[in-house]
Length: 234
Image 1 (cartoon, rainbow, N blue to C red):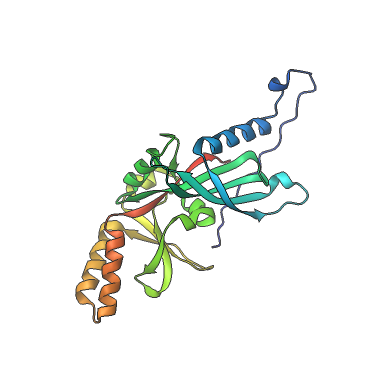
Image 2 (tube, one colour):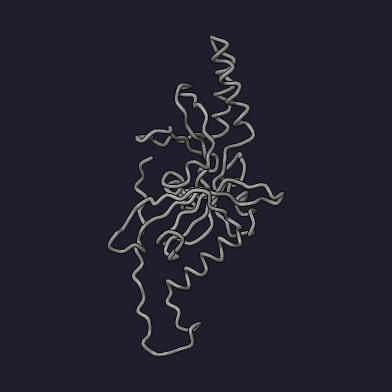
């Protein structure tokens, strides 16, 4: 999907010419890299497939890497996760280094945020923003036919606007998007959405249409998927 999500490039910091012990003269970039690797280790993230999202041949450290893999949950089962970072393959600079996974379903934006905060390590996860989901993590939101056109696949998900005031004012608002290059985001009120689906079931003119909306109701009445992120970004 297309996205206007852009990242600021943080200038590198000059290394002091003074001679210190090895541990004391690490550049900030090296420190961020160490912290990022420690975070990935702490999450026990296992990479299964890697894709270089953008290549910078003149400065490879500014390339953008995307990894698909998993993180074990409390029962030991692997949960699908995605790792995005700036740097060469396997060498994050720490400039941008995020891991995302789904935290189940929620019925409000507030509940979605709380679900993220409960992921281990506690309190370090946060609900992903709309640009983050659309640019990198859309695959963490399960796909299924959307009401507007059962022949097309789409996704439903909670995401933060990045503004606490706006989020509080839109606590029932979730988003949907078609799985196509020119997809446009659409907003929905959770309770209104369920009411519309139930009404459509009652008014369905064919068994096929009725079965479709019954299945949609089963998948959404317990909540909408919450995509959570952890890590560093500019």
